[in-house]
Length: 144
Image: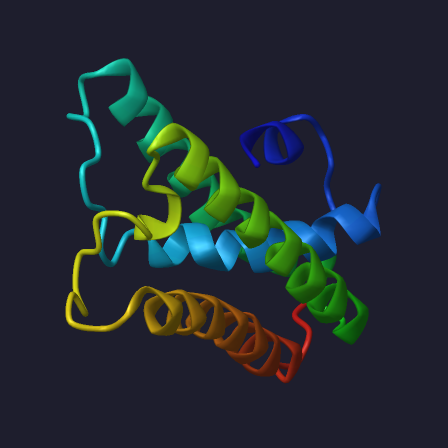
C-alpha cells in the first residue's frame, strides 16, 4: 500500500490503482479504531505503521482537492472481489504460520462467536465499509 501511494501512482496516472487504493485504505483507516499489538512509535515497525496509515489517511483528501477524484462503482466491485481473495489467502497463511492477520486467531472481541461466524462478520464489516465509503464520498460535489 505504501509503495503505491509514495511512488507517484496518483489518480491522474493510474485510475484503476487509485480505485483499489481508496477502498483498501478504508481498512487501514479503520485499524486506527482498534490498533491492537502495534509496536511502540519509536520502534521501526511502529514508525512504519504510523507512516503508512498517516499517508493512507491523507491520500483521499489530497486526491479530492488536487484532482477532484471520486471513487467509482467499478473500483467498488474490483476491490470487493480482490478483498475476498486477499482475505482467503490471509486465512490460509494464518493457519499455516500461526499468524493473526485480520485478528482471526486472537480476537479482540466477540470471543463467544464460533470461528465461521466471526470470519463472516469480519468479511461483512469490511465489505460494508467499502460500500459506505463509496456512498459517502461519491455523492459529494466535486471541489475545484
